[in-house]
Image (cartoon, rainbow, N blue to C red; front, side):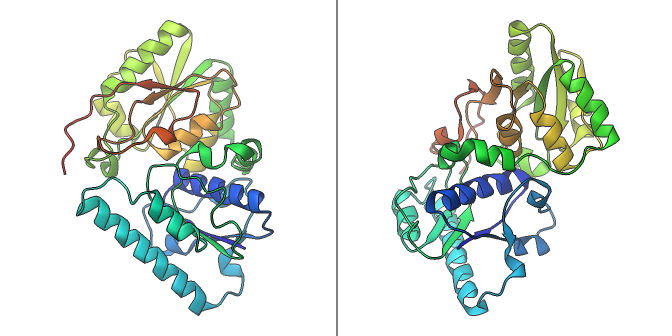
Length: 312
């Protein structure tokens, strides 16, 4: 039995599911359960995986010993606190592979690090496997990519408004430009990587490759982008759609300019265009000590970003 505790926004939920599903396929476990209890108190993001073609059972619908699961939640709290201490007090970028291996061998597949750690021989023989973390690398599920990508496509019907935009996307050399400008991003010294100039330069590069490129702007705050960005080309703003609708429209584009966000990552990754160009920032964090190489996949073209001085 595999129990995944889902946390974060849609992009993070997708990474977690991809990892858990790959573990299920590799270990031939029959049951994959997802614990969504974190979203009862977490008001910033909604749980949206149930709107995709995913295969799992809601953990809250089964009988499971409260005592046993409370002990599991204690190990997750211990891991989370340990990770925070290492990052904020010891000033280290990650807990490291030894910590990952220790937890995995007990059946606790926990990872808040950016790094990929090999899981193929760890923890898979345990009867119960508990998953908690982010697992932001294609390497965790590449073996089962075709299955997982099909399951992470949107299943809810298209709205009439979506159909109109989708027709425009399909009939042009569409470029999905995913811009993150929320305060949780631009005011975080660890994550604010993609400045307006990054997007302008990527647009210029794509126009040189294909003069017919048409840019579609996906963002978490349309009014802020309209006010603060001065794009060098005409753009179409994708507005009035929820996260699921935006995801479907984004992965329907032919090429991409992405931010350092998990939503951007999946929007480009799920595209069926085999010759897609994915412009990505050269780093997903301002921390120079953080090795984030594992988050990149082969179609990504790294574009240098001017990283502000990292503040400890």
